[in-house]
Image (cartoon, rainbow, N blue to C red; front, side):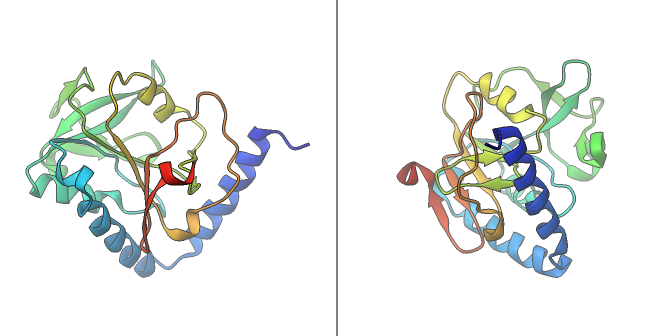
Length: 199
C-alpha cells in the first residue's frame, strides 16, 4: 500500500504541473474572482488583523488580497522564513513596494529593516493559507516544509483559516497526518466552501 508521503508527493507533482500549464491571463482572471469572493466573506470583512502570504509561481495571486486588505485599512502581516529555526517569523507590512524583497525560493518577504516583527499572533483574526491542493473537507496539502503546520501549532486562539485556490486544485482523498491542520473555508473562482459541513 502506498504510504501517505508518497501519495502526497504524487498529488503535489500533478497539481503543480497542471497549474503551471494554465495561461497567465487565465490565472489572473481566476485570481481576481477568488480574491473578490474572499473579500466579500464576513470573516474577512470583520477582521482587523489579516495574516496572508505572497504568492509565487503559478499560485493563486494572493497579493491581490494583500493589496485589498491594505486599502481596507486592515493590519496586514506577512511571513518571512527564518532559516535558523526553520519556522516563519511574522512581520507587519504597510507598503508592498517598500517593505518587501525576494527571499527564500524567490518569494517576496518582509524586509527586517523596514517592518516591525510581530511576536504574538493573538490579534490575528484571519489567516490566508497557501497550499498545493485542498479537499472539500478542508484537508490541505502544502509544499512539504511544514512551515504552516508549525505556525498554526503556535496559535492559542481560533482565527478564521481560509484558503484561496483554483477549482482544479480540489482533490479528494488527500492523506492527513496527525500534525496536519485543515482549513475552515476553501474559496475557488466558482464557490465558497464551508469545509466544516463536509468533514
